[in-house]
Image 1 (cartoon, rainbow, N blue to C red):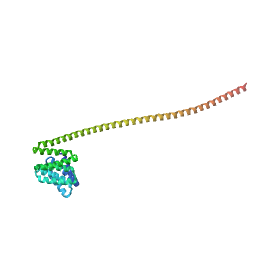
Image 2 (tube, helix red, strand yellow; image 1 turned 120 degrees about the horizontal axis):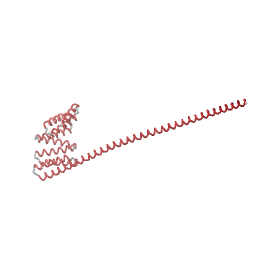
Image 3 (spheres, rainbow, N blue to C red; image 1 turned 135 degrees about the vertical axis):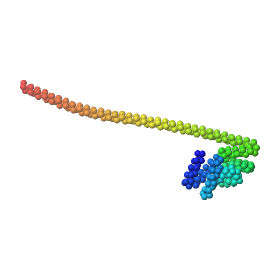
Image 4 (cartoon, rainbow, N blue to C red; image 1 turned 180 degrees about the horizontal axis):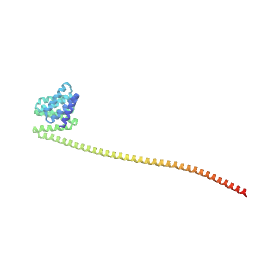
Length: 277
């Protein structure tokens, strides 16, 4: 429901902007979603709208993907002849363009239509082509789908040995994908854990560096204070000595002058005394 709402909003926005490529893309995405939900009528309305757009804006890729979705609907409606015609048009396009993903899907769909038509030999050929291309491209999911289709076909024909063979291949591949998925999840969790640890270590390192910078700055401030205090103390000491020396000189000068004055007074007293006598 959420995905369909998203595609519908994207489609509405593309129509307002008149962006034909985005319109076709969202028509295909939304119709594919409806088909997965077995809402074939809603899907067909969108696909017919896509064909109307393609009649004006010719795009081989979107025409192929639209025909591919329409082929699913025609098959559901039991119009197997038209469904096969549409799938063949898709195959002609994607083989020429070497669109391997669409080639595999088209061969799987073709095989399913042949099964419905009870053309089991041709169905087997189509499925084998799908297997070949899936192995070529490494498309494990499409390979698993093909194995499952061949299993169902052989079970329908009471070929239980063949059905078991392909079912084992299907199961082995499914288990392998599940194991790969688990390992991928484990690796992702491990990478996320390592990233979280690294982030926390970086935060701690930043805090430690900030603390060290603060301590260094504090030590530099202390050194400046000591330096300035030392310089200031030195200056004060020099000034004190200077003024002390100056005061000493002044005192010595004053004492000398006093002594001289005293001597002069004593001499004058002596002269006065001598003159009296």
